[in-house]
Every structure is written in C-alpha cells, then in structure tokens.
Image 1 (cartoon, rainbow, N blue to C red):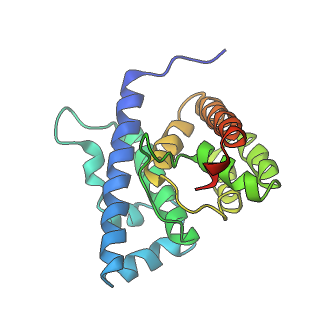
Image 2 (cartoon, helix red, strand yellow):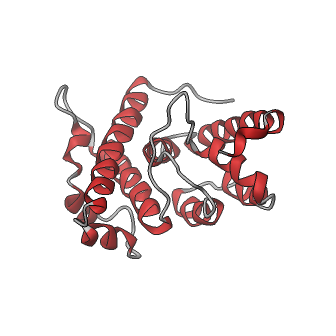
Amino acid sequence: MTMPVPQNSIWTAETVRDVTDQLLTGLQARLARGVDRGEKARLSRNELPGDPGLWLSLRLEDLHGSTGPGLSEEDYVAGATAVTAAAQMWARTEIPHVRSTAQRVTTLGHVVARIVLDRPAAEDDLARVLRCHSLDELLPRLRPLLRDAARLDFARLAADLYTWQQPDGPHRTAQQWATAYARAKNRAHRTPSARS
C-alpha cells in the first residue's frame, strides 16, 4: 500500500525543481558564452552529492525559499543532495537540460521510451533502475540508462531524487517513472514521428 505524500514534500520537490532549473539554465547560458567552465568541471568530479562543500559552491540557499519558516535540516539535506546529484548527472553526461513542456516532454520516463526505440537493451537498464532501493544504488545506474538521451529535464529529475529520499519514495518514484515510460512507449508505437 502506498503512503500518502505529505503536502510539504510536494512543495519541497517543486522548490528543488525550480532551484535546479535556475541553476542549470544559468550554467548552460554561461557555458555557451565560454564562462563558468570550472563549475561544470567541479560537478564532473567524483564527489558525493551529499557534500556540503558542493552545496556552498552551488549556492543552494534558495532551497529555503523567501517565504515561510524554511526547510527543516533533514529536508534541506535531501533537497541539496537531489539538486547536486542532478547537476552532477548533467555535467557528466553532456545531455542538455531542457525543462519539460506540454509540447516537448523531457521527463525520465518519456526520454527512456525514445531511447528504447533505437536501443532496446535500455529497457533492461530501466528495469535495474526501478529495482533500486537507495540513492547510492540508483545514481550509478541512471547514467548508462540515459547515455543516448538527446535532452532531459534535469530539474524534474532532481525533484524525483528528492522524493526518492522520502519514506516510500523509491516505490512511488519508480512507479511514476514506469507509468510515464509505458505511456510514452505506447504513444511512440502509435506515432512514427515520436523519435524527434
């Protein structure tokens, strides 16, 4: 039985998504101008996403928001770890961050469905990802899964990684990814232009 999701977890997941989107959109824009290569290089290093030194360099104080009492220490740690893990995945894969829209869905389940069209073995990689129980187990399995992605909403991924760290989070998140994947795969088989 799936536990109900607390409202503050939903708010925090959306805050994580917004902070990650601002961070990566800004970094991509600066990199396009030849600025901030050092930040991307630092994110590419083999540091743990739970490293407070990385959180300081990424200036993640926006996770506390400008209104309300701010996050508990536990929620801040989970949120900062999620933002950092998604930013590291972005830096290490060379996949552009593109926020998902109704016209162009770039969430994990949809992206994997497009990958499977050209690399059917990616479905096995997805199955391994969906069986993970901890963030430490999950993160190294995401990279090979996404290696053929043309774009990804890393901000949505960060929100999912935050949710993953909550009680019953791995089950809930895996279920959402599997459902999105199945829907996108069915749609791709019905529409030949789905590879775009």
